[in-house]
Length: 324
Image (cartoon, rainbow, N blue to C red):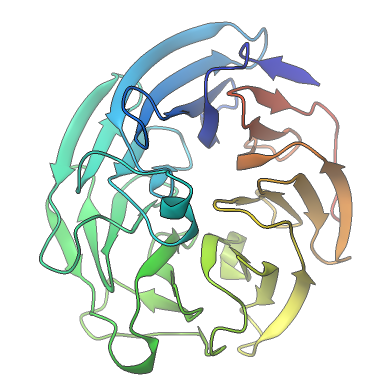
């Protein structure tokens, strides 16, 4: 195992590999600095082969529930807040919009101001190819072009029984479908590129699954994974029914991280109490650590799982894994 970073500098809030697998990018968050209750972020890039630190950039205030990197570590999105457990833990920010950063250049690309629906952004997501940025404000969501900074789609405001703050979002592999989840435990997917709403799949749990904290959509839009305040849930989307692959209690956590391997066979999960890697088909844990983690990722070839700890270090496991 390779460990990047010295530790004691905050926690790792987001993690991603570059497309060639030669670099790993992490967002470190310093909680309570410089003002109590606020979070300051720093972007870091390491070379995987020898662990050399290639660059570091201060990205200012951020909300720990609203931090995202795209699949190729080209863009970083930071939001100004979050909801529920994250805010209760003091993971707040000093601004109310969403900022997009160019990772390679270390420059802010643009900023999205919040609308009339809430005081802070409650969710952010980047498509794997980096073309699209999704933002949520309370029960309203939108999609933006990262190339132009202009809005690409106005999402519908959630009404009725499921109306509550959107706590987490995730794009499907192609970037066409967007998975969303609300504080009351409603989970669904939208083909956001269509003018009319085309929700493919919805879980109406009545809050049974708890408040969602993190989501991930597997390759070929086969499975949807959600970590909530009640545990880990993995559903088979292709069955068009709520066919749970995994339903696993997890330690109580204000934040969480999720990542499928490129072939979808493995799922990495990070919470305050531990990190895990699951073989999805076998519904079996193949790796587990007692250290807390809010950020997990796989290398592009799927052979190198990585997790960021709560002290600011990134851990790379150089062992071949198989989910079969």
